[in-house]
Length: 70
Image 1 (tube, rainbow, N blue to C red):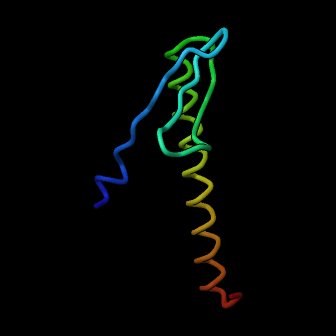
Image 2: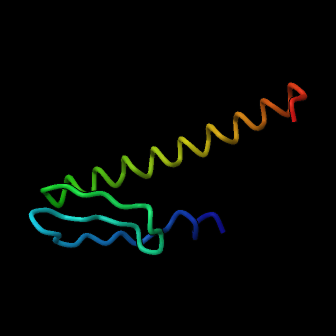
């Protein structure tokens, strides 16, 4: 199950003067750069930022529950 979540198709297409990298099936996971390699690096950064945001939200919710501030 978790392996299925970890698999994703990354699509990189020429877009104007650069490249657009996106995760197929996830409209908000995309990044643009002038080099194909840099678009992929930027997409990795976007994914990490979103993951960190969600981890922070879960942590804050758990802390709130521990402190009794449901």
